[in-house]
Length: 136
Image (cartoon, rainbow, N blue to C red; front, side, top):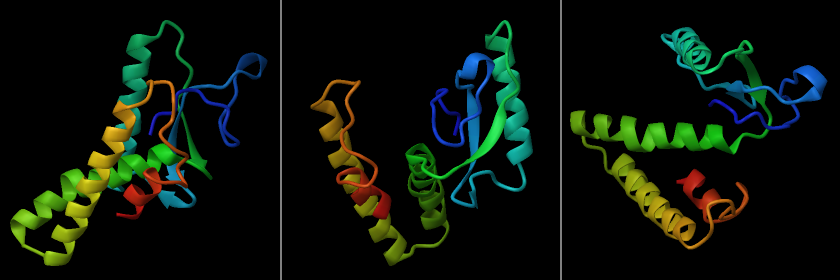
């Protein structure tokens, strides 16, 4: 998860204490990078940032103690990419039900987002409708 240069507790700081763009590679001790391709992903992210910036800072990987974006990314990957591939190979009622619940919660969340301005949050990560979706 590439962070937007926020001021989180583990966020790196540059000149004059300004936050630097960084990548969250762990969330509460859980790696967000797959072992087979994580290093390559970080290298490609750095190349991309370098091509868009006249004076890029090195992209620092950090562990986040509180990262809703990481939960969002991993949940979406598991439910929207990985689970459908697994279900094609081998039907599983429990997994199918979990994906259906996730998609229902996602629809509810998107409807809630459509009703508010882009700069407003639907809820904190610990409240519904976001928490219900994470739990799916």
